[in-house]
Length: 125
Length: 107
Image 1 (tube, rainbow over the protein chains, first blue to last red):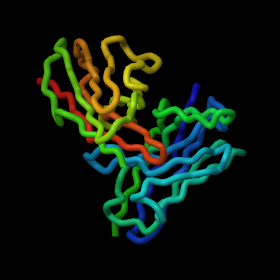
Image 2 (cartoon, rainbow over the protein chains, first blue to last red):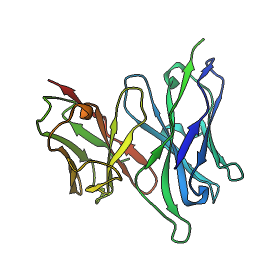
Image 3 (cartoon, rainbow over the protein chains, first blue to last red):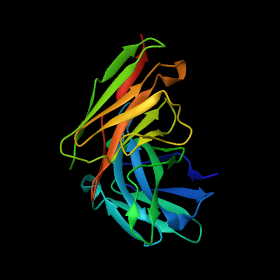
């Protein structure tokens, strides 16, 4: 079955960077996109950006432009999200999530059918 | 950016009652709206996609309706496991947004 398995919890200092991984299994990595969504404690869901692994093309939410980089390694079916210049407000659970993508038509579905288990990133001095 | 506004913020109901959750978009999203359920400590779970299609394995008591800017998620008869937070989500050409969520709590 399809699984997205994320890396473990991180504790970071303000001003540093964090890189979270999301390894996919049970599906064809070229058949979907991977988005990153975060959730601050007690808050709602916030989309950060996404990548189409087979094309290596990423786009980001305006709020995170210049501070987030999403990459993918097709050889290991793993996506990565790196967030820099961390501040306390970045303390959150970070999720990866999958959307189906058709390389032939370029069509991407508008929803997430599978999610990773989440990675808690704590930013504290 | 399209803003999704969910109402009410909290819905207090008893098991067996009907739950009606609303999601309003700041501009038309056609039928490209999804609903998710999230329980404490868990990742969101897809319930409904394209406004009215139930995802695989989702019970028939969950239904979605609407198009354009106004959408509704209905739970026909609440089961104990349905008490959770529900989010709507849309994706436009370049960005994706979630609503603020509705918490369905036990009355």
